[in-house]
Length: 204
Image 1: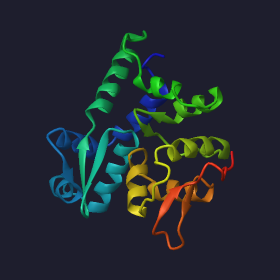
Image 2 (image 1 turned 120 degrees about the horizontal axis):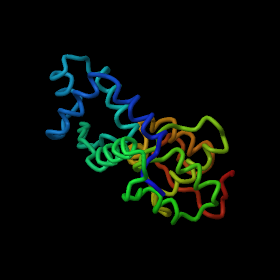
Image 3 (image 1 turned 45 degrees about the horizontal axis):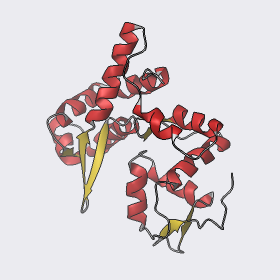
């Protein structure tokens, strides 16, 4: 499968179509930073900076590292290289010799061809581009996300959030959907989470 992906470029160009986000990318190219320092450097409020960061995380261009109660952001060089390679392919008007690593991991999954097609549509460079609006597609994404958790292990809510954030910034919605659709179980009060046992088959 060729690296060129028009829809991925559309999402990337939209996310980068803001001067503040381009400045954030330039700052993070020099090293990781947190919201407070970015806000000071950009002369913007912290909520505004957080909003811009969420847009850049949604396309996988930046990554999050959590340390105690602080969040540190850094540029994702692999995602940047993929973006640059796709732009180069678009300019050349011909498939690149570079093959998308994304297709390899999708091909190895134990899923139907239809489900793999949905994953390729919504997941690129290890990031969930957007949460599907159609329930059948949501279930495919949720099954894939549930597979990122180890069975026979208990997670705190913070750990669940951290894992989901690797793939999409809206961890709250996805965490709730994983529980509501039966892919994760939650202890009353939300203190502990675990993967639904194999003998308790989730829907879909």
